[in-house]
Amino acid sequence: MDWKFLEGLLSGVNKYSTAFGRIWLSVVFVFRVMVYVVAAEHVWSDDQAHFDCNTLQPGCKNICYDYFFPISHIRLWALQLIFVTCPSFMVVLHVAYREERERKYQAKHGADRHLYDNPGQKHGGLWYTYLISLLLKTAFEITFLYLLHYIYDSFKLPRKVQCDVSPCPNLVDCYISRPTEKTVFTYFMVGASVFCVVLNICEIFYLITIRLVTLKKRGLVHTSSIMKVRRNLD
Image (cartoon, rainbow, N blue to C red):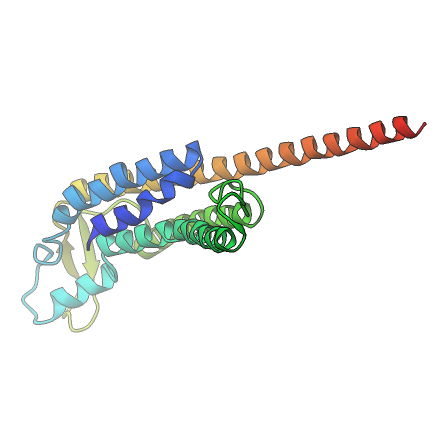
């Protein structure tokens, strides 16, 4: 998987993010993508090859592995990283749309005329786009955490599992390779994901608070203007 391509796309998101968004992006690349690429992939690379069962029955080992690991942790995390980063592109596309409108407006009315004070400023439709992207990222994070826990019934990998699925002749003991190391990486990735959820929630409250404060200031200014007009009329 080409993570450099994903990093190049997300680098544009950093320009339009709040402080919470920049921290989130750093956590995703330093504590999730880099750990995934540098270490986690290698830890799970021999997962199926070193999944040993105390039977020589043909097909039993493969069936038991598929039963206990319907989808690998690595592939699930790869999907999770793709899904949680994709909503950020909504913001980049919205800003690009604004910049194109600005270019056409200036071409028609002159370079000194502006349709937007700053195409990347989070107001109007872009504010809603940014908020929706945060809600989607949070929803995807929580969904994948639930899936990981639901599929494996725990974040901790057992040392031994017992399988009696056909064509296994009886109850077979199977042993997972490096269960402690894999459990450590699983908890680390889960912890990083939970921290990203917390950052997203903080950013959502931050955006809403700033929005309410701005609207309140505008309301006070509008009320003050009306009062001045009334005093002048009196």
